[in-house]
Length: 419
Image (cartoon, rainbow, N blue to C red):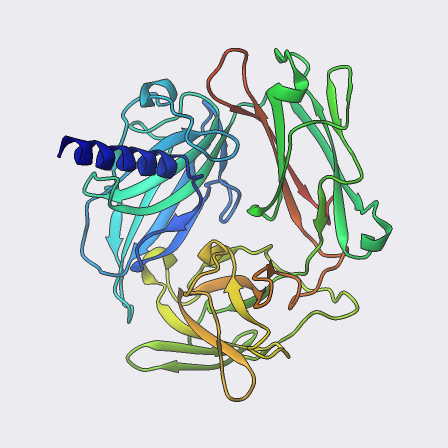
């Protein structure tokens, strides 16, 4: 009996350790939680980064479609550059309490869909980071982390290095018409760096999408106190295409890309059919680089008076279902490829789905998953062009001598249209 108990305990520990080392990501764990926004308060939908010990804050907002009020708690945990837990005690990275309850909530008004909107700003008097780095924000119910509601990635920087970056055409001749290459120079003057190849790492991502990112672990060469990353084979990104978008700021009239709006016991929005955009040449379109904005043109406060609608999407992919499946993604669903974003095939040879979304302006795109290879491609249906306007985020991580954690010591933002 003791042997069985020992084996079960061993299996539990192995599973627990494996789970605890799983990288944290942006995720929503309950189907009734919708419209999660998380950004620097200086600008809606902005990258969720703040400077340590400054007046900057991020705001988290989300809706609970069950209505009423629930006991939601939150905390933050320090992580390394790869979003694994740093395994520090909360006293080492938090200035005050280890968790707090979300007290700011309001009920929806004059909407078909009833919901409760929750909101919290960080840092605050109860939860504040002590050291720079990556932090995962956790929201859970009844003070029990086993009842996880959602997680969001938070970046806390203490700027100790200078970052110079520029975007050029790819050095690969075959990719000149499709790819955008970033060249970086990191000046770490004044920083105690004993081994530049080990102590500093640079992560670069496109449009705040970690799945597009490259982790630079070694520079191309070192020039004095500068690390130069310009090798022909690194930081070479697919330009992709501008995002598609639709506008439901008003449900009283058809706006751009909307075919029909029905309002009865619920709101229904039917979008125009989307074509396959993998064309020979780039076409200029304006987008929000994958973001979404909760806006109600007919109300006063979209946080509580914007309504929800069943939004119907149709895609003429010019591909049969035997070849693969498209998924609809954007910042609004954390670019997740799952059953909620998967599209179905109809008898007319088109793919379709519907999503339950709050009023606003949404960017989205289609990702094609090939049946034979099971590989996901966000260019197969959208196209891939050097001319595409993109945002890039550059994050510099540093491990101090003798430290057990990594700090975020540099950040740079680039826009290919505003260099």
